[in-house]
Image 1 (cartoon, one colour):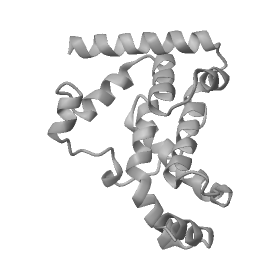
Image 2 (cartoon, one colour; image 1 turned 180 degrees about the vertical axis):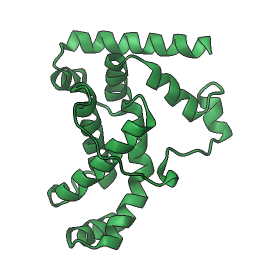
Image 3 (cartoon, one colour; image 1 turned 120 degrees about the vertical axis):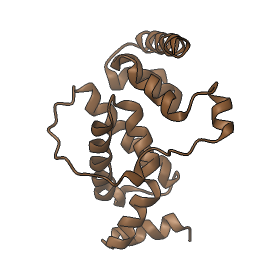
Image 4 (cartoon, one colour; image 1 turned 30 degrees about the vertical axis):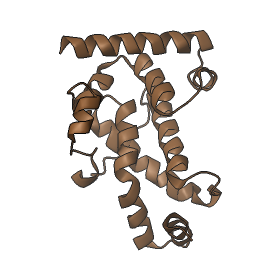
Length: 180
């Protein structure tokens, strides 16, 4: 039995230690998803908190047809998309999340080479500067692997608009990076 299978089993039994371990194992990765879809750290932390609540309440539906990380990533991406597309109408209760769960701060030379000398934090900053409608499509398509058809359905736009927004997002991102 894999460690994820054991964690899920224990979490379903309401084992608080297992819930803590699951959170600690995946919080950084899920925070990365939240940050990609929001324009600020506080909104991302709110979505992270709400996402884990949803994971724990929906865990009995997880069937190991994919990895636990993939299943959770889809939950967090969908939650972030829903929050952003409805204009953050939900009122949040602020809950602090330890700084250790922030996006990874260590940058390797390989990372710097791959991103043209930019740190992951700088790249994220450029993505967060994009207007919301472009940032959403860029993240959904390029990072989370949604098809243009899925994007069109989720955002209530045409497939052509999805493709156009992706193209525009890429151009804007490149322009912003060149200007820096």
